[in-house]
Image (cartoon, rainbow, N blue to C red; front, side, top):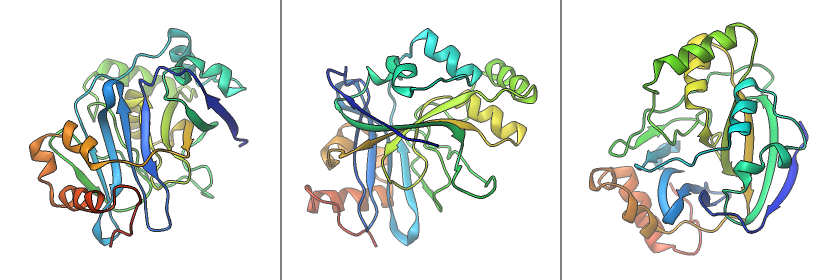
Length: 241
């Protein structure tokens, strides 16, 4: 699948990303308006990853884009199809790809998961085949999940939008498509995804996490360890052992 490069200038900055891809692991966070952290995907000890979510209002996508994502008919160039979403991003350089099967670089479909993370429930995950939710997981609206399950059984492949750091671990944050993912899981079908990867991302600061995550979440041992690491290396990403 070919990759499109796009530079966002004059973006609303409703969706922003902090992070860094290094030989030792990376940390990234999805930021909504006002600099409020929405979700975290970071390194932890023992080869695990740490994921967390903060309460926040998800951005609304344009109606035309939602229809295209629901049917899976996202046309190229993606910079045109995804324009309502790209206009919400912070200024910067991004790579766009898809629609394609999740983990399409694998020779066959592989198992994947969405950890049940909440504002007070950071979770450790053991491998890179996971998606980080930015909304309640699993979704509560059963009617929408049922609609997508029927669509999938009929052969349609609704697209989910993922955002992440270019070259990063994991598959990314779910910008749109939580109900679709629940339907794909229920049907045992590998989801169709569109990816937005940011390059040259700003480094994450510990203060951003402390300002937006709950005291309970901040008390998680792995998160406390990550914050200590960030405090000691505010301008770079050291190895997390």
